[in-house]
Image 1 (cartoon, helix red, strand yellow):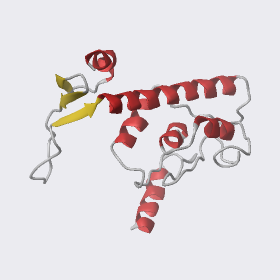
Image 2: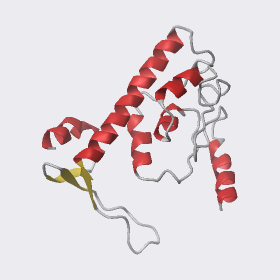
Image 3: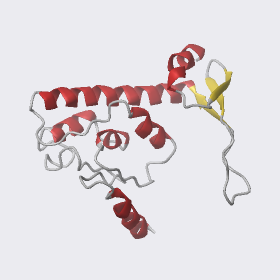
Image 4: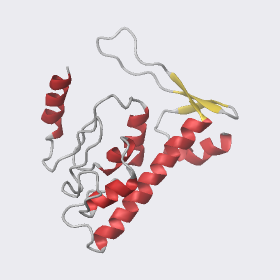
Length: 174
């Protein structure tokens, strides 16, 4: 576990300190949050197991490989139109997905590939969608910005549109 933590230490957010590292888990100390109109905030410690850490790293690696393949297909002009890649941002989707449940609804802007993966679509379905194939997650009609999965309401090409769309989805689900 210690070697795994050392390997990803440069990926840790600022202020996050490894407090304890055992063979099967690691405990992190998180700086206290400044609070506004709250009596107490989130916990200042968190623990992750070796298996959880491996799963997060695996998902980030799959997303990176999938996005690199999408980049290659786009450069070869096999992917038409826009292709907004998530290279270098893999930890955002993977980390956020790890902190919510599959029942929580998600909407994103135009970088939707990684979110589609974390929501359960296999890389083949995402790459098929990018290349316009019927086997894609939106039957080849959605492309890079319009991928959908259970409780994933995709992305769109209008900058900032996910905010009012997300609010509408929240009202409907309420």
